[in-house]
Image (tube, rainbow, N blue to C red; front, side):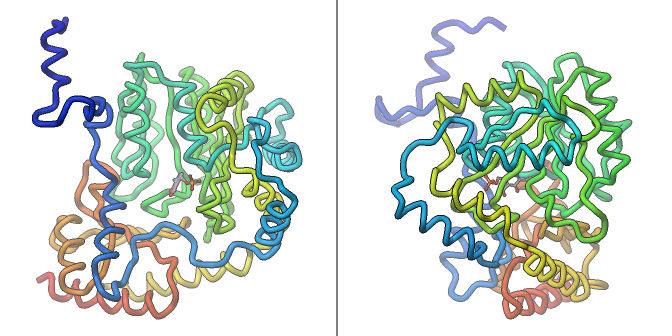
Length: 389
Ligand SMILES: Cc1ncc(COP(=O)(O)O)c(C=O)c1O
């Protein structure tokens, strides 16, 4: 449809907002994240039971804190090369070569894995292009695709949260440029098995689309070893980072690796956007690579098991094989109504499922909290299930 200049002008004028304060249609089309709303609610409640925050509750490794302090004192506070400090890049590249068996992957250190996602999608999407996304999905996926004029083709994975490769094949149309995979997954904790990720990599190659694999939670796999699609195809683009694996969410260090053409495009666009990842964070990340994380990760598994044991028989859920989330069905049917009732009756903060996709049937619990909070949360959830009728 051809829009006239007058139509455009009308669509762009914002009722009542003073000239000069107009935001783009892109910005106006989105509301702030539902997770942010849960944080704000928690901030207003006295002594809330906050199970909404998706970050580790253990400390960043001592060696990483020491390295950050040393970098700061040594005056390593300036810009770094766009792709990251060579020492960190070398270590990550070596790890990638070992794990994929591919020697010509390229790698760029980014400003968090969020930065890697932004750059990768900028490198792949033209207006009108389509991206297959498995819902429920991480909150950034849809806005990032749509900011770029792309269209999300959602595949609803509930109630099993498994990926059906035949459905993916049927969802790839002529405008599809990418499949966005996240395993272990936020918000469901689902882990895709080795056969599924291999089949997805093959399918993407056959159909000429890019499989983007967000592996931020790869160190949180409780029941089976982590399986990446990257060893199955040189074309897979992998997103990773230190936020969850080393409790470094505030330091903003991630990375992306994949075929040279795509990673070179990401690097070029990083020059014009983020510039580089924070330097002190990169030195901390380098030291973090040598820090054993087995103890905090097994603590996380213990909390998952305690939460599942506490809720079994009271809630309907798929046992999560990874990440640090549990995604039960909401008693009463609406995740939003349940989250509101949980806050009002129990000062319990959980995230309703409609934040992660079209369905409002579930809610997310993040169990990276101290034992007292987890116990209070379980007791509150059991009472809420009992009073749901
Ligand atoms: C699946 C997934 N990908 C990416 C990110 C972004 O993480 P960061 O930018 O801190 O690396 C998150 C954060 O919650 C996430 O859950």
